Length: 254
Image 1 (tube, rainbow, N blue to C red):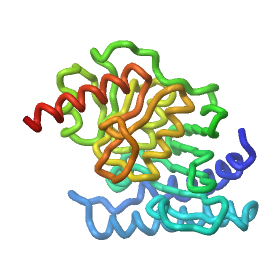
Image 2 (image 1 turned 45 degrees about the vertical axis):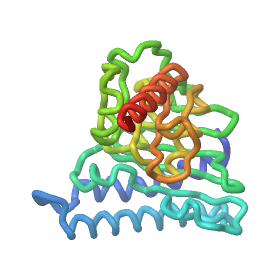
Image 3 (image 1 turned 90 degrees about the vertical axis):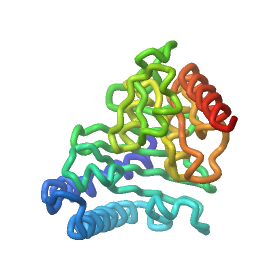
Image 4 (image 1 turned 30 degrees about the vertical axis):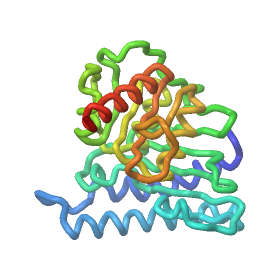
């Protein structure tokens, strides 16, 4: 593991102790309330402070930002991009399906990334041009060559409508980070999201490409806005999903 990822792991583990201690105590109600939203924000901020203080002991010259500030102009050579809680709605509902994402960028390009699933002690890391790994070894995308019952992670029903002719088996987990890790290590055959931020797009692309797959927008191009979406998987699944999406868009346009 790259030395900078070892520090990232230490920081995430420290922040993770805060998350695991606070996750069972989210104010419960029949719907998401102002109290639970405020609790989420406090937890997010506390985890961010813990992470930042750990990293700054080793890299005081590096900049550390939240995922929403990924595209912000910076003078720092190295920037750490953190999403302490990926899977916000799951956290608010006390579901054990959220994780922490860390991206380390140089010259506006992600060079390293880390996913930590605190509940299942899952640890996934990647370095550009060096591959991605978990505790079980190197991660590789699946080798499926059929869309029939292929496992595809997605976010909302509109994406499923585009691929309804392919007879996919789909999963909605509410956590893109865990979906990326499951796709990169072959548990899922692909993922298709209708929306993805610039950070999430680059993050997914780094993991999936280093695992031997492809990641593009739903149209098969480069990211320009959140509405471009994200599709990723092995070569076969990526090509099939992009082609089917293009077919459905052309039919709808007639």
